[in-house]
Image (tube, rainbow, N blue to C red; front, side, top):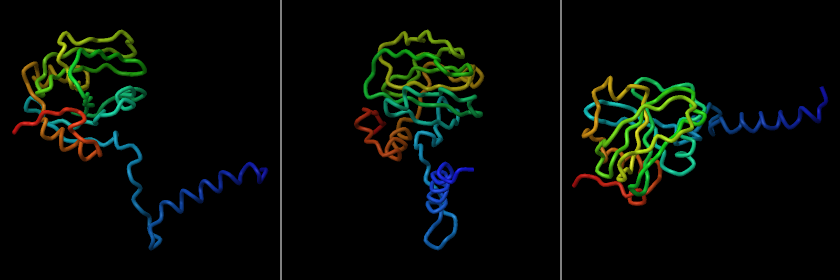
Length: 176
């Protein structure tokens, strides 16, 4: 094999190996390069779930694209800076999900089924939507979580801070 073609690969491999060593030569823990992939425990309608947070525009645009599914009781919470009508679609999402549209007080106002690869937006009927929670298909029905149930905004505030964002920028209301 031509050494000129192999050299960049070897340098990259060496750099990676060096980066994974601590000062004492033992393997170091590599920080999570994608903080949006972290799951946080959250209560919704009395059910315990784990959610990833979609806080910034890039995370919100990607959503659940290119994945093969969700784990049991796992989902994604979209956090928007203001309440307004929302619409989500399933471009490049390979599996069906359910979505809950949630108001600024953390109250679920409506839920909808969404189908794999359907690029037609599923729009909220309500204009006061600040959060959206995506869960596995039929999760809300099977877990008896319905309009009127709430998400724990105090926990959402804590997790947004843990991600390095200012909750005030997202206008998250938390109970006094």
